[in-house]
Amino acid sequence: MNTYRATGRTARLAATLLTAALAAGGLTVAAAPAAHAAASDVVAKLPISSFSALTVDSAHQRVYVADSNLGYYENRGLIAVYDFSGERVTTLTTQRHVSGLALNSDGSVLHVGGRDGILRYDTSTYLPVSSAVAGTDTCGRSMAFAGGRAYHTTPYANSMSDCETTLTYLDYNQADNTWQRSGWQDQGKLQLEAGPGDRLMMGQPSNAKAADPFLAVFDASGTTLVRTAERRFADAEGKGALNFRDMAFSADGSRIAVADAAAGTRLLDGADLSDAETGYPALPSGATASAVAFSGDGKYLARGASATGATPDLLLSPADPADATPALEFAFEGSLDGDRVAPRGLEWSADGSRLFAVTTNATGSQYWLHVVQPPAVQYDTRFTGGLTHSPAQAVAGEALAVRGRLELDGPAPAEPLRVTATRTDAGGTHRLGTATVKADGTFSVLDEPDLVGEATYTVSFLGDLTHRPATDVTHTVSVGRAATSIALTAPAEAAMSTGVHITGTFTAQGKALPERAVLKVERTDRLGTGTLSSVTVAADGTFTVDDLPRARRNTTYTVSWPGDDLHEGSTASATVRVTR
Image 1 (cartoon, rainbow, N blue to C red):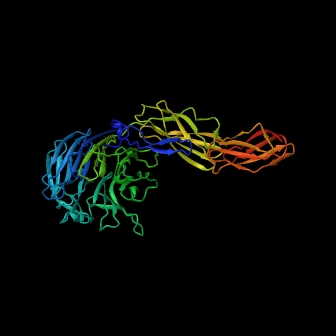
Image 2: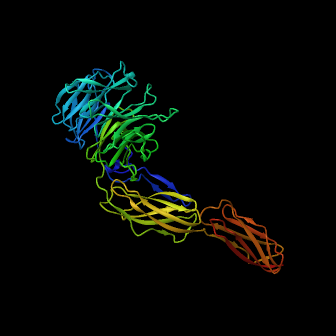
Image 3: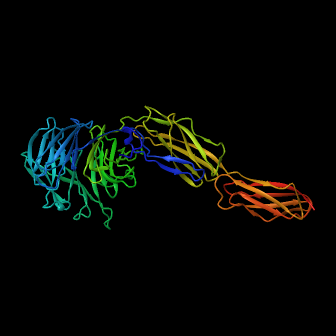
């Protein structure tokens, strides 16, 4: 079963709790992934045992998933066809294995990479139309439609074990259905991606013959494929090489995202492939990048990953890396969902209303198709009424609650929202984790300030894919020293010959003292005031004072502690009548 923390479709939203424990008093603040918008996620089990390509026909609302079925030259491949609700419409079978998929510009023809040629299907009837010859493929093709042509890779190897390093050509079909070499080739299973403005991108997976793999962008508008940008990523010491998994153009082509199994998500300038000035946040710890896809409306970036347990396998973020709105996070785990997003397993509908994700199990023998509908509308949020705190006098080392209210427009969220909080004091700024927003909008941030002086609390709501961020609200608290007290139990009368025996208890509130308190003891009698030996408080807070008085009549014993940076001082006295 999966590891989602909620029920129903909204359970697809990961809700792993991170707990920030406060030092004293056993107080905790529960922290969870920041995004809590509901997202519809329906799942179809795919009738495939391998996966080679995914493409989306937005004109006819169809999703095509190819089962390459490589391994033996007579293996039959298939293409499973689904509608946008996850229902299987039909299955296209082929006489030999199939790999890459590409749709022409109007979505009327599906181009399919076969072993010995390029197959074509009418997307309205699913009937085959004229096919095109191609060089023999034994390892699996990649395909992309750019500049009015269907481009395909042609890898050939005598053995499947040679496919990772075999020489692969970039070819295309001509009007007479014959194929033509573009002149570009290199080692390994080269991958293709089409982009706006008749552009074509090619990425090279790492292999034994490509220690420093490349990424390249081509202009496909003319009769000749012209490379306009290329990049290899290793530094002078050979470190930082591309570990390619997937790539995608942004909706306007100005940016390129790359799923790099070593570096995570690389964001590049679409013109020259230089690093973008602002990148995306790192994937969660333990997640390895496997897929990327920008939505056609320019709003979202989907990032797929391979992760275990409750670590997210899919993140939906704003496409603008400067937008700090937290991502929607999905953790796939189990026989109903798969365990991870397959490499190159993400595609969007053209309008950005649906994301299609192919997931697989740990062994890569089973596959699932997820249809995710992110929220389409964002609503305003605001903090109202300012912040308050209790108790009224904040004390260093003692629990303090900072309370406020978050007001939301639009419908109530399916999952509770969370606010984040920080405390800024003389020691700097400290993250306090998150606090849950209740149904009435109220929240409480729990803290234990550990310095005396002013502490400013800042509460933020960063928004999610349904709600816009709110303007931060702040509140300054004067933090005082914690109280201490001394209690004495003394006899009313004592003899000079037997001495005075006093017991006491020392109590310190707030943060525990670093060492046992040492108390000053003074004796005042008719001869004057003098200081006796100090006493050290035991671990349970008790102490004793023993004295042989020097004079008869009333003798007062005063026990005091001066205090420290976090605690007030305290004093207690007891008077004993001394007899002979």
